[in-house]
Amino acid sequence: MQNVKKIVLAYSGGLDTSAIIPWLKENYGCEVVAFAADVGQGEEELEGLHEKAIATGASECHIVDLKEEFVSEYIYPTITTGAVYEGEYLLGTSMARPVIAKAQVEVARKVGADALSHGCTGKGNDQVRFESTFAALAPDLKVIAPWREWDMVSREDLLAYLAERNIKTTASATKIYSRDANAWHISHEGGELEDPWQEPSKQVWTMTVDPEEAPDKPERVTLSFNEGKLTHVNDEALSPYQALVKLNTLASAHGVGRIDIVENRLVGMKSRGCYETPGGTVLLKAYKALETMVLDKAALKYREQIGLEFSHVMYDGRWFTALNDALLAGAASFAQKVTGDIVVKLYKGQATVTQRRSPNSLYSEDFATFGADDVYDQKHAEGFIRLFSLSSRIDALKKQG
Image 1 (cartoon, rainbow, N blue to C red):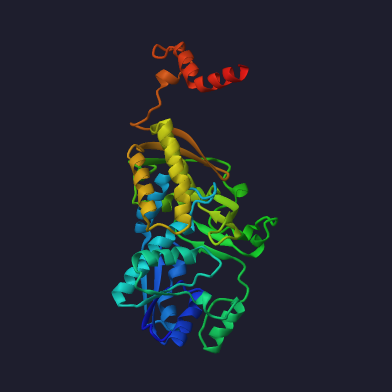
Image 2 (tube, rainbow, N blue to C red):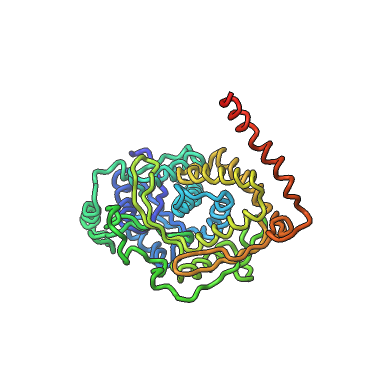
C-alpha cells in the first residue's frame, strides 16, 4: 500500500466517496485527487462539490464538463445500433461509464497520478465498466477498489467512520433508494424495489410526471435527422446535448419513458430497477421509425443483430474494444441513410410515431397501394412464391413418396 503516491478518485460527493478519500490517505499514505464528471446529472449534484472534496481531504478537485461529449460521442452512436438491453433497458448508466472513466484517466495523466480509484461495490456492473476502461487506456496505473478491501459493510459503518474523524456529511443512515442520474436517464434501486412483488411507490419516480396525472391533451414533437444524427427538434437547430434536454422536458411532462424491470447483472445476480428515460425513449423510437423507411429487409435485420450484440457490449463495459469498433462501424454505415423527419405524439406515458418522411425512403405508394396501379403485376407473385417455398415442396413430396 505504501508504493502509491497519488490517486485520482472518481468522486460524487456521496457517502461512499466521502469516506474513501480519508480511507485512501490513511491506508495508502498518499495524496488523493478528486475527479467529478458533469454528464448532465444536474447542477444540484455538483453544487459545492469542490469545497466538499477539499474538506474531506482531497488535495485537488477536478470537475470536468462531459455533457456534449457524452451525448454526441456515446449516446448518439449507441442509438444508431438500436441497442436495448434485454428488450427494455436503454443503457443509461452503462453509456456514461466509458466517458467518465476515460476522463478520469486523462486527469490522472495530467496530475501525474500512479493510481486510480472508484467507489463501486463488488456486487455491481460499474466496477467492471470502470476497470475495463482503465485496462484499455491506462494499464500501467494501479486500480484501488476500497469496497473490495476495507472491512466496512454498511452505511452505518461509513457514517461512524466519518464521525470518528469529524468529517461532516449530509448523508443519513436511512437512504431509501440508490439513484444514478445523467442527461439520458435516472435509475432507481433499493428500498421497496428489492421486492419484485412490490409495486413502486410514487416517491420512486423523480424525473417524469405520473402518466395518470399527465395532460389530457396530446403533444406532438418533430425530430429531424441527418445521416443518423438528430439535428432539429420542432424545427429548432440544437446541439446533441441541447436536443436531449429539450426532449427530456417535453416527454417527461407526459410521463413518457418509465420502465420497471428485473435485469441480469454482469456479475451473475439479478437486480430490480426502475428507470426514467423520457427524451431517450422518444429519440430511439423516432430513429427506429426512420430506419424502417430507408433500410431494406436484409439491412434492417442485420442492424437489429448489431443492436442485440451491442447492447451486451455496452452493458458489459466493453466500449474500448475491437468488437465495439466493428459494431459501431457497421451501424454508422446504415446510419448514412437515416435522414428525414419523424413526428411523435406524446400522451399519457406513451410515445407514438404518427408521421414519417425521408428523401431516402424506399416506401412507394405506387407499389404499396390497395387501389388500382400500373406498376405491379400480381400474377408475378405466383412464380416468386413457388421458388421461395420450393425446398418445402420438395421435402413434402419426398415424405409422400
